[in-house]
Image 1 (cartoon, rainbow, N blue to C red):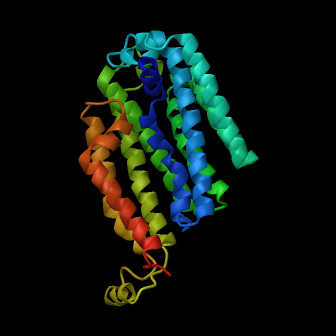
Image 2: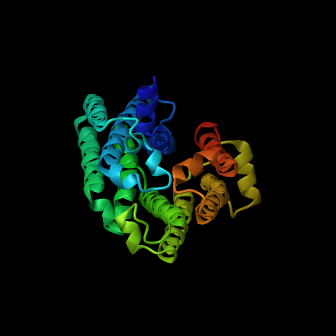
Length: 307
């Protein structure tokens, strides 16, 4: 039982929240209520969960000695000795084989995307993570691959503005992760070579730059790609205010998007955590804003407001 719990911890299920990006195309293409599309995306989500966990296991195996020097990473299952390295290697292999098998059942091209993601992450663990700037771009590329894979398996078209938003948000989250890390271990921290080449000011500028790009690109997406209103009430409101018009319903999410980005920056700049994914799940205001954003999008696309 103790080993099972340790293996679950080693899988880092909290990081599966990053794989929710595969649902983006399903939601924004209006296909959420299609059983066939929904099942395909859920299968893709599970496949990415398995592969993501495998990459984290591999990373922990490779970094176990360095992790023992870290104030919190020293408690990870491999670094602490709860999971022997040979068990971790077997577990990693099982996760990879299972994830690739499920991917192959979805489609060949999806399997190719998963393999690209897998080898990119292996390269990251083997040394690319020690190259400053490139490490952030690799993390961001992982987010982009997830979203693109989700769009591919349901044959959905997403506008260039949304792709720009995905890229900007991915870079925002990746640079935020590094900024949070350096806030905890300090500049020149021994736990990650790339951190020695960053300063707080540089990473803060990255976070600010990509945070701004994220909400602006989302705003452009809502301006150009909002579904048209289809209910008498919304049509009536658009007649009252020409500034809102009938094809910009999603613009109502812009203030929530800006709040979420500002709140996220505030939390990581407080230097209380180096795990942004945990911040996203544990901060009440971020959770509320995320749920509100999702509900509004669902109502606009699926609540009968749009034509």
